[in-house]
Length: 275
Length: 275
Image 1: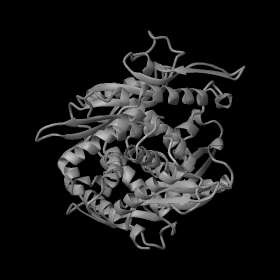
Image 2 (image 1 turned 180 degrees about the vertical axis):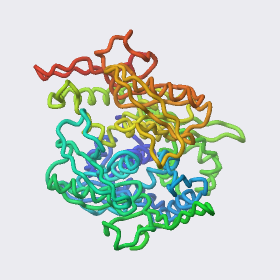
Image 3 (image 1 turned 90 degrees about the vertical axis):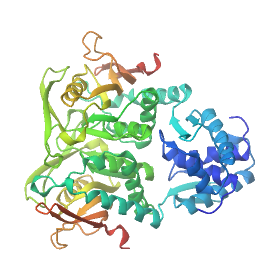
Image 4 (image 1 turned 30 degrees about the vertical axis):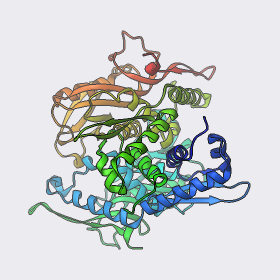
């Protein structure tokens, strides 16, 4: 790369750091990339750090020493998180979302990559300091949120299937009871998808009693893996806390009431803001 | 926002532009955001434009006039695209991917958000100048690539389901013939997911004879929507071009041979590079 001026370096370093979250980048990488002294790179990083913090985008940590470098940790500020969740709740409350049976149509929201990416940043913020090896979800609707979260945490995604697919190789299957309907389902995970003793962040779009997520927890036990956390976009507040199979999770929004008669949907902020 | 210096503006404008691809941003937005003159903003944009072009990240177009502004169009340079596809082909050729029946295990690659994002940038580059309203895929494995592509093009994703789900509302279902096995399957799309006359980019992870994608094309006809393009991560080269149901598509890699006996997998660059 040709030698860059400070103004050009700042542009390139910004895009480089944003594209590599949760990754330690040695200062020499930048020094060589731009043909600049490490002291100049440090000054550049100080400018970027200030802007990222002022904008509520996250932290830039500089680690000194031979094994040192800089790491960008995306962390949305409380202010940005709140603005996003207010907007999300407003959209979830649109009365034309009510489907027969009191279900809520959310596919239009789940289909917006920018919205999923922002929601993923929130879950990644909640678990930014936790030691995690992999993000897990079960098909289908939680997939975009799982990838958005994993991208921010720089982690791979492991996808649990409802059926055993020929393209997955040998797999471990379990039966689980859907908490709200008490019906029995199957989920299956490729044997080579997950290493033993992995620390796993479970992500899904919706949680009612938590049966599906409990199924994933049980599946993890088959792999001698552990749950490092659970993040959901929307939880149903219609479930009493005794009834809920899972107590330790982060939700962005909470669906407290759906009235098909009056077409009123009530959505509140999730427990993300309770800590 | 407080008044920023040029160096700080460059950092913030870079992250702002990267987070809003294919979006026209009026210069006044930046001028007000930073309390700076439009002439200063124009100078900043010229610096960012040069770095983005040198780095092969895409184009920054400035449109003059009252309705003017700046638009970032992600376009990976040929050099970056080539480097990525070489890496992808290398990974696909790892011999331990062969599954019984000559299938290829790809879930580990599909589970890497950074790899999917880069692949999505390539497909978005191929279709950057096409008029498109929405990206479509069918569950399950094409979902990450579809979202990665849609994020770069600033478009929503429409997800076709294998079964009609209660959370989708009323839906249109069709039967389609899987080209390689001649077996009959069903796919279904929520009526409210797609507007009439939408221009649709179809994205999937793998294409053999193209039966699944032809199914999506047929489904689009039911919505009076049109195909604006087709992008796949891997196509199978084992299919003759007469046998292939679809001629107009972009592939990143081409699987030309899988030999379960010698455990040899041969993967070449896709037709992305043929134009």
